[in-house]
Length: 393
View 1 (cartoon, rainbow, N blue to C red):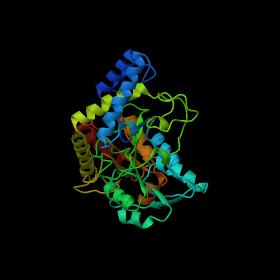
View 2: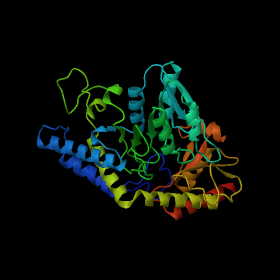
View 3: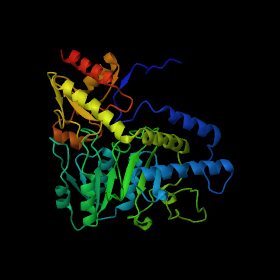
View 4: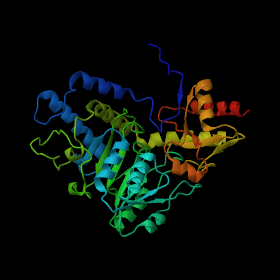
């Protein structure tokens, strides 16, 4: 079979990482061939093997984020699913929520929908367009008597800048407010510790920097949140108590009704093991090096505008993501030209973060987003810069 993507330079890892380590497909194939039954703690040997795979993955991921109870690691379809479970499980009528203008629509839309019906009130803290970072003092000033939750993206998916999660977590804990961290752009490359950073709820995808398959993700509910603080987002079958007329109020089953994506979790477990073995710090350093290479090379091209921090230390507080535009061309034009003429895959548009684009002045067209990953090389960046020079010439 011909691999139609063999010559594609893939620079869209902020959306989904590609390619995946070989161990991911190997683990998924082996699981499908041997143990792909419905998990069950007291069933036949295949069911128990599937349950064991889930439990091992829970423990692995819980340890990876500094969690203390693997039963509180809830498997979800993706990060969006995890965020919806958190918001709709925790928030009550009259609550006030603080979030930021950096957020992805996975955070913004469910909260805005609740605010539009009058169920909650909502405050968005702005970031600095120059640094791409919020000020924790602004979060502190936004807290009121009804503030229930602070929801923050660990890193923005437009500028790639890493937010002061530890400081915001401290502010939340000081005021008795719950803190939710969306780690869609950071888990797998940036150190996370739910205890040290005072994180009450942590949402993550499996398919980005964890290098796992799509259709995987999770929500970690720290011990600072009781199961009685939450409402079930969905009800259904569980591997636990089937006699109860309601969803059993025990983790993880209270928030994990229905058959889980066991084959996806098998791939995610293998991917997480790969990332841990290789070293998240090494992966981040490599991605930063490629982004800095782009900044150094593309800054000298007439008509190219790079957003967020630039200069010789543009990546000091960034994951491997950066946005740019080319004068005289829309982002979608540039994305189309790069794809069709140069076989370079980037992401044009608003990246599901309209509030961020409004702040940096790129709304409504958005930007071209570059996000190199673990398997990219400096030659890939050279090819992108050469293509931009040809386009602008």
